[in-house]
Length: 230
Image: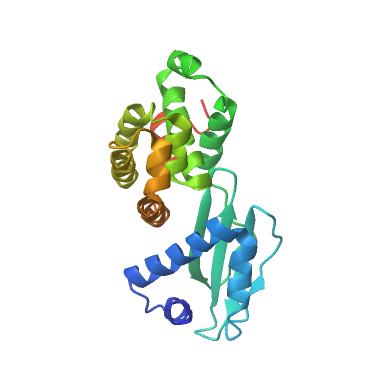
């Protein structure tokens, strides 16, 4: 990881090196939170990472000035209830805060208003809000406990509708992963049994989801919502 960080700082990192680095940090963020990412970065004494500006349980930025063209290496992390992200960049003059994406607010405000809606009530929602419900539920469950948790908690009843929504927003990678996850449970008595019996396979799909780079909130907001969440 030290070599990957150095190559990013020098501007010589390939797409694959950057993707592997961010995937490693995303996995660490999922398992150990921002504190885990912070501990890892601080374990690299050559880079001397420090926190940039204010940090919280949900967001933090870490910067390292390592002397390449007077620029600094910045690792920005977000660990909210429905969204995890890591962005590794090189900046000449980094902003003090992570810019907020208005599409995320639109999507998550709408999704949070639908949390706890029953299956019968979901069927009565207008098509746009129903699509947000399906995509939001998938993302929340997968980010919390993976595809195994999503399928076990929902018993797979939303898979077909969710796949249609993912197709509409162009989230082809996530759609493929959901299809593969559903297939893992096809020969078992329940998705909970499949998750227990094939934990390693489900974990690999979870890792691929983190590495996919698909921003489901932004894609869904672009397709189904106006900036104000309507």
